[in-house]
Image (cartoon, rainbow, N blue to C red):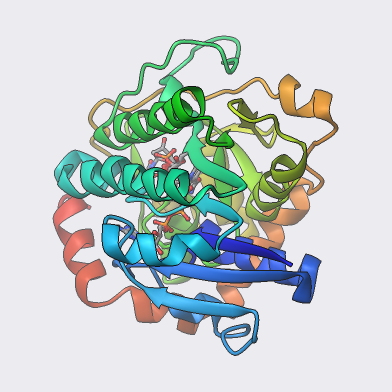
Length: 334
Ligand code: NAD
Ligand code: DAU
């Protein structure tokens, strides 16, 4: 039995990953989910599996050295999702990003080194490269992160590499593009626009809406991580992408069309500070190993939109309290 420490498992990708592991491996895995339950952590994402005997939840901070040290000796594989993950929040208030994304990764790496875990997966991001107008970034390209979020992720990415190079910790680093799917906190483009459109609220498009992102279905990202745990080489970085680049305007139009809502909901607002124009990663390296995404964007985006339609209770509960305060202050001119 493989014993996993999944950090940030109550968030969007982490919770999808826990579902993925349990569906694929059943009792062959034991999962410890360590999550601080920040505004983005939501145990409802895991209610269907919370009573499984091979799953346990621990509420705690990855920056807590003592706690992490007590958990690590029982672990074979660490998958570090825990992070502050929203670019806009990092622009308004970078502190927690430096603390969790960089220092928290250090605490995990140090404990993993001391107890000799079998594999450490650092979930990095394609944002560490910065923006690219033409072509696509390779794993060997220079990192030029633009936001406090992506800069802190770049710090953790390279720190993880240093634990491989210096101490021989079996680290694999993934740099994935924009995920979409169920359980994504409705501050990110797709769930924000889908839920706002359902509520007939405006869709706040930054700048001219022509920024480009590559979209990957979250289950494909989970599958790539699983693939790399067995097939990735230690010390290596792997780009992961959906091969599906779209402008924000294309995404907005698609959402409105799918929900049968009017174009008048589109509202252009001031641009994000330091807004990266385009992200694009070359995925030849992971493809050479034998992995590629299996979900079609056309199908998966429809089922994602349908999921938010059918699970209004999940996001209506979120869109209160702290969320509303953030929303009002961030989108004050909408
Ligand atoms: P999320 O914000 O939905 O979830 C983050 C989770 O981490 C939450 O459950 C939160 O409670 C937890 N957390 C935050 N600080 C913590 C701490 N100090 N200790 C323990 N838990 C803590 O994020 P997400 O979108 O699921 O992203 C997960 C990871 O994947 C992040 O590392 C992010 O950088 C990376 N990533 C995300 C995307 C994307 O498109 N969402 C793409 C590539 C990489
Ligand atoms: O590329 C991977 C990254 O994708 C991850 O590392 C991050 O954790 C994740 O948040 C995401 O970052 P982005 O900044 O690309 O995602 P976001 O959903 O915030 O924005 C997507 C695009 O939509 C971006 O160009 C900004 C734009 N946008 C976003 C919001 C929230 C708007 O136009 N209006 C909005 O209200």
